[in-house]
Amino acid sequence: MPRTIVDSTTSDGSNVLALGGVCLIGVGQCVGVEQRPSRTVKTEGGFDHGFVRTAPLPQGGRLRHPPAITSHGAGVVTGSCDGTMVNTRQRGWSELKVLRFDHAGRTYAQASIEKAAECLPRLAKAAATRGDQTATRVFVSDFAEWIELGVKAHVPDFVDVADRFHIRQHLHTNAEALYGKESPRARKWSASMARRLAEQGGGSLAGRLRRLALYYADLTHQRAALNRAAFLDPHAEQLHYPEWIARDLPVDSGGIDSLCKQLGTRLKAGGRR
Image (cartoon, helix red, strand yellow):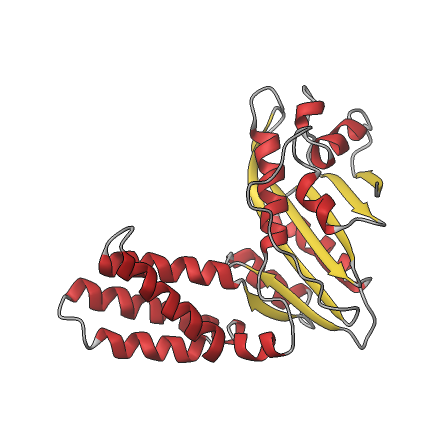
């Protein structure tokens, strides 16, 4: 089991250990805990990927599709963060921010009930202690604006990578707009665009979508293709997948997505606030 450290920025220390149990064991075993603002749960030391996937589950539970997590070597520091909303007794719906760093086969994770402005300095502090000056630093996340701006402002030495799975979701939405939901043609089109994305990058894919728009007779289909190309354009620097895959750098944020969703699910259940 990892060493669990629970920090509090408030003077009242009641329920701190119970909240740690909520985030790390699952609220199925910690019913009735009150979450307090700015309360932080951190884990470090022997915290492996299996623990990340299974710790927030109720006893005897399991994930139907555990995310595949690949180690990228001691020379790579992988950062990620995400957020969700939880309903607390004291403040009602509040933001839960979760950050995670993987380096040299070990994982550091932190979950806090706080806003982005409070989370980002914690992110920078955690990033500064991971790896040495020779490490390749990569930050993988979705397109949340607070994350994009936070990476640029607080961890500018990290390569900012857009989560490839989120891009594929957007592409599949386009495919269904073109060919209908659950259509074999939609799945084929989506798979083809995903391959181009991995093999040639976001810039090439945006160009391909613009060319395809010229072949569609339906104005709605033309607009769908052009809108997706326009969506990719401002994120071009985050979409160099061929280079990153060739260097064996991470391009997916499944670990943080899984952790954040599990924590949110456990904390949103009835009687668990």
